[in-house]
Length: 176
Image 1 (tube, rainbow, N blue to C red):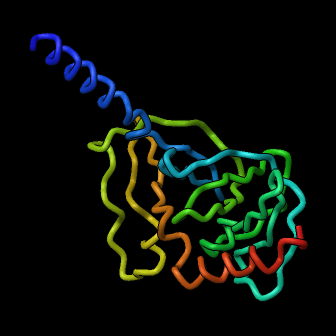
Image 2: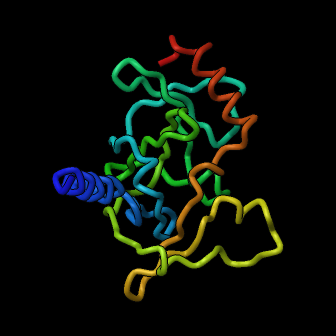
């Protein structure tokens, strides 16, 4: 019976190690500000590449890319947030994230690092009268004397936009 207890303790230790992504955020720079998204959403980071335009998409969806045979819609986060546009350069990256089992590429100015931001260092989003803009913000993460705007990845696209993108992916596979 003592052996059984030892096995249970070992299983508990393994279970504790499973949540290694907790409090980890991929940070990136966008229009003079630092943002973060939970690392659990990030599939990969790639350099900017040719984006095939797709008709009838929202203006912030720049088109699709072919990533190892998979067609992925690409969102320009600057355009989504109604920020000034900027020419893509060698620092511009596409952060591929998984939103409700849909891969979406997010164009950002440059990727910074994976930062550890404990839950107690994240405050709620600032209170504003404008609800639409704040729906993208999950909170404000504090690292030393810096503030990172933590994005709510699941809110970057409305359900109907996700559906439109999913339909666009299946109809426009040849576009990429």
